[in-house]
Image (cartoon, rainbow, N blue to C red; front, side, top):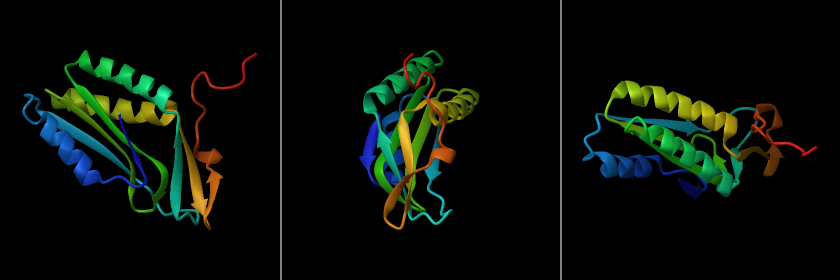
Length: 144
């Protein structure tokens, strides 16, 4: 798990991952890069992360990928990320492309639904919780 302050240096991150795994006899390295879109008057998105739960979430994915001789890789921003820059990079390395293609899709979708990362719009210098574009994390809420 790689957490960075501000926008991600995508090329540096993905090149490091490539160099780490290129000699491990894997035939596929697939990445997904999330780019902050300019919409709704935002100048940036801002992120808060609860790292202990995120580490647990990622560990379960690493174990799942290992059962298919694959690896999942993950980098995310905390704090402000300007429009047209990246806040999220995910990767899957696998001996076979079909496994990598399947896992990257499932990994990114599960991230959107279950990773403990809270998103805010930055408009006119103010952080505004992006409630309409957020999902409740499974199991979150008030205890009875």
